[in-house]
Length: 79
Image 1 (spheres, rainbow, N blue to C red):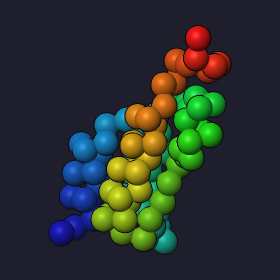
Image 2 (image 1 turned 90 degrees about the horizontal axis):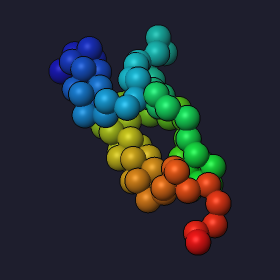
Image 3 (image 1 turned 45 degrees about the vertical axis):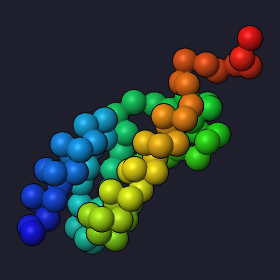
C-alpha cells in the first residue's frame, strides 16, 4: 500500500494527532494539544516516531491508553 494511503488511514484513526513521514522514511505523530503534568508523568509524549505504519499505530495506541488513564483537568491531589 502506498505510504500516502497509510498516512490518510492513520490520520482518520487518530484525529488528535498530526501524522507524517519524514524524508528519511520514519513515521511520526505529534499531538494537537498540550499534555497535562499527569499525562507527562504517565509517560505520554508530544511527538512519537516509528520505523513503519504498524509501529506508529502501536505507539499511538499506547499513547492514547496512557493519556486516557489520566484526567487532564486534575492537576493536584484528589479531594
